[in-house]
Each structure stands twice: as C-alpha cells, then as structure tokens.
Image 1: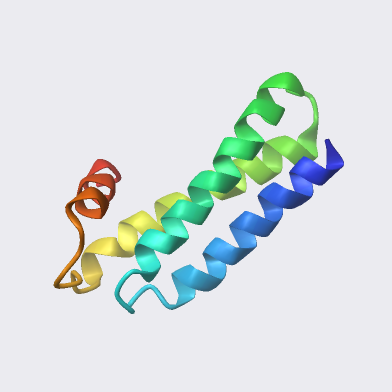
Image 2: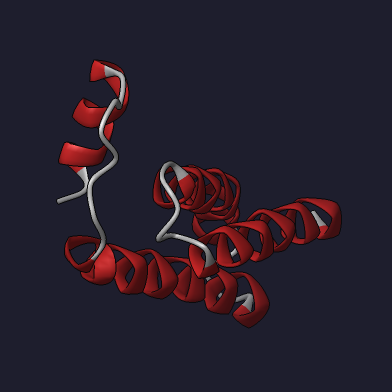
Length: 94
C-alpha cells in the first residue's frame, strides 16, 4: 500500500510540474491526465482505508490541484490543432 501511495504522489508531483507550464499547448491536458492517474490510484485506497489520514490527505490534495488547474484553464489560449479525442476529454472537465 505504501508503494501505491508513493506512486499516487509521484503522478501528482509530475502533474504539478506540467501544470506550471500549462500555457504551452498540450501541457494542461498532460497535467490533468497525470492528476487523473493519481486519483485513480488513491481513490480505491481511500475507500479501503477511510481512517488513514495520509491517503485521505493525498486524495483531497489531488482533487484540489485538479480544481485549481481547471479553474485557470479558461485563461490560457486553446491549442490550434488538438485531436478530437483530446477535445472531448478536455470538454468533460469543463
């Protein structure tokens, strides 16, 4: 379980690095994708261990950072040639 927590934290850290450069085309999507990977790892752990504050904190922080990135999304220019699959995925986050 500790390895899964570390992996979730690693994906979240990678997402934060990509979010810092979200003004570059594709980085917002890459950051959200990594936040999604962190969430997919941490959510089942949080459900299995509801009294584990480390897991709950990590999941909550992941959701917060996803929301922060999403709230700034509208301030950035849209990339010109984004594949339709990516546009559909990004639209689901708006």
